[in-house]
Length: 120
Image (cartoon, rainbow, N blue to C red; front, side):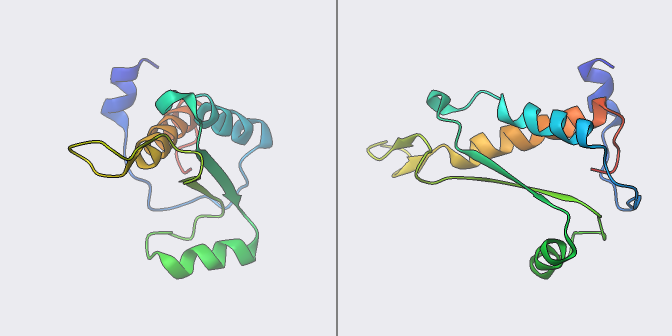
């Protein structure tokens, strides 16, 4: 599938299958997020795979948008690792964390779609 086809067919899933995602597919999705370009190649993005009942319950406590997914990927960044521009005239104390994590998350979603996983 080419990118334009992928972009046209993208949607937000609200109903999840209870079958587990195969480990090989999950590994490819995580690798897609790991290899994305980041500011100064600092790679501050971090991924947490939430699949235990305890971890999923904690995630469900902080968002109403979980739709009872059997697996969640938490994408965040390490504030100590991000590229920083403390003297930027337009954006005081700018750091690249949000952009780096967002690029990683989007790339992971594209990889999931490519793998035929519509409910990740």
